Image (tube, rainbow, N blue to C red; front, side):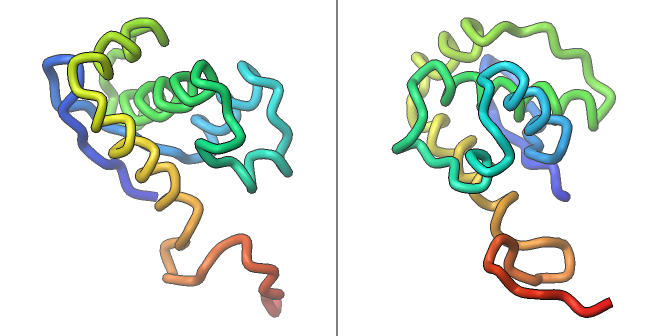
Length: 114
């Protein structure tokens, strides 16, 4: 899974929505695996949307070996400065759900042979 780079909070920061980000998001919001599969900005609260962004930034920093000590509130402040970044980050989440590294669409009910 790729790490995207987004300029936010005065720095270029990595964003990654792999298992670590999803585990953290699930633990913080109580969302189930099934709910994660159908997650969109239409069925989340604003706080959940900010937590999702924070989880992606935290996981990206961990993956890249960078320190990350920002809070959800810090991310909200950064987004206040440039609200269009919310779309950039959530698009990275959407991309992470769409295609696996082999180019196969995910979550489409396709059975895979062994």
